Image (cartoon, rainbow, N blue to C red; front, top):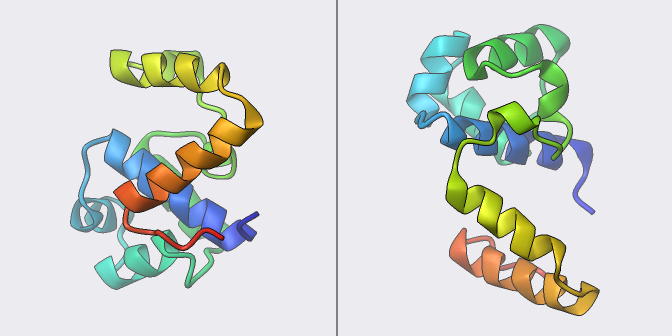
Length: 113
């Protein structure tokens, strides 16, 4: 399992994309550098509480959402996302591993063993 910095960074990126924001847009809204956003999203840098708060405000999420994959029902707006979640929930453990490998290829992080 990814360490906390990597998971946090990945969730920041997910929320940013869900909001249709670029790293530059998030950096401006959170009053951070684009370089810092990149480092956070890649798990190369952690964030202190004030930065976490600024990121959460810029992304319009509760700060806790940057540490968990649980997404409040009110936030799920995409029909395709809902359909994907339903189908994923029905997969076996073996097929979930296969899906993770496919996702790694799609997002360019093809480094799973």
